[in-house]
Length: 230
Image 1 (cartoon, rainbow, N blue to C red):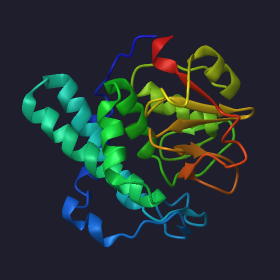
Image 2 (tube, one colour):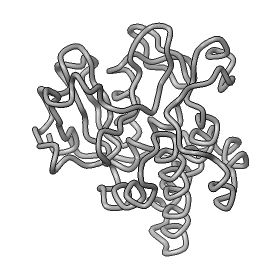
Image 3 (tube, helix red, strand yellow):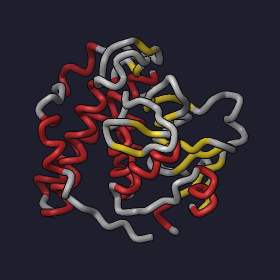
C-alpha cells in the first residue's frame, strides 16, 4: 500500500495550532506516568486522561499541519517548521512517560514521513474516549479504530480488526521497529512510539486514547509490524 497524503483535514485542525505551548515552557512539567481527571474534551470529562494530554494534542495538531504544509511545498522553511513542531510533540510525549526527550525526538525524525504522520495523527486524539467498534475523530476509538485512523492520515488503509492488521503488515523485530509501526498481542493492537516500550493506544471501556507503555506481562510476547510496506 503506497501512502497518499491529503491536506483536506488541515483547515479543521488549524484552530488547535494556536493553542501550542511554547517550547521554552517544556521544562516546567515533571516526568510522570500518572493520570489526572483533567478534561481534554467534553466526551472524556469523567474519564482518566494523561496528565500532559492537552499539551500533546495541541502540539501534535500543529505538527500535522506543519507536515502537510511541507508535503505540499517541499520547501526548506516548511521542513524546518515541521521539525520544530515534531520536536515539541516528541518532548511532551517523552515527558509523559519519563523517557529521554532527545531519544524520542531522534526516533521520530528518523522514521519515514508516513510513519511520522501516523504517530502525530494518533497523538491528536489523546484523551478521546474508548468506544467499541468506533473510529471517529474527537468522538471515540477502539484499538484497531485508532490505528486505522492514524494510518489513514498517511493514505494507508488498514483492515478494521487487530489480528488482520498485524497479519497484513510486514513483520519487523523490536530492534528494527520504528515509530509508527504496529505493536500487537492477541486481541489488541497499538502504535509504537519508537523508544523503549512507548506506545499510544485505546485499550478498553472506561479509558481514553493514552500514551502508555507495553505491559510488562506482554513485553516478551508482542509482535511488531510495518503496515506501510505491504
